Length: 306
Image (tube, rainbow, N blue to C red; front, side, top):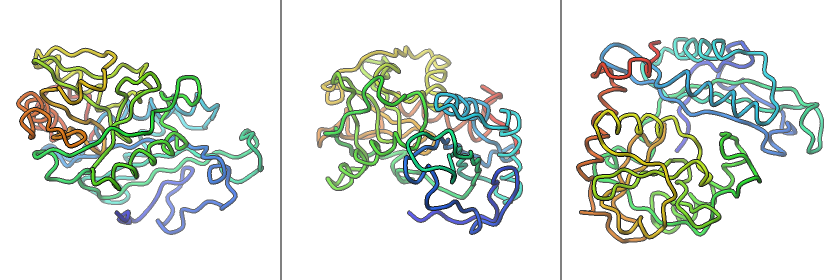
């Protein structure tokens, strides 16, 4: 889907018109994928516009940069403020937020250290990633033939642009097969995650999610859902999950900034449970939206008001 333009982009500390936020074609990021980024949502809540888990997203962004030895001249507080300022500058009540730290134009070659760092924040209006109706009806997915990145190759705790070449293979294969999304296994054959989402399995009332050791990105929404399960007295475990449990589960759902809490109704054309959103998923989803829409007083620290 085309990105809907907003007015201004925050570019190295200054606002520039959307169409003027450009880099050189020989920037290091174009040749070698050297960028880290975040996906964040701002919700139009009953109490005003608020960014979901802003501090946790910025912390993960800086952790990703640290792993790739990117020393940027902005603190976490600077970046949080810049994100809020960018939303205000564009006069958006709700939006998707994309901060990026990339290596720009300087030197050619694999060594990135001679290239300048560019820090960019863009915001735009965006709806449900997997479709609005998917939040209730669920989505059809497949198990991908592509595995997730092996340990000690690329750091999966970093949300880095290069990692998403793997995600693209998973996503394209799924779409061409008629599915909404693909689920990747790790190199040991255990369930890892979707192309851009974490996954949760529900069996006999217990919620399971793959441990970070299964090449899983430490999702911000994933963490929030784990906390919500505990609030609702639902047992939740982080552990290795065998592929066959995807077919035998009572319920499955994806989480992510874009996907939010999206039920999965079938895997490889095998129905999950009743083939529709299950009761445990519905409880978790309801509480999640109550919080992000400002209708619940639980976890007030999760919302940073614009």
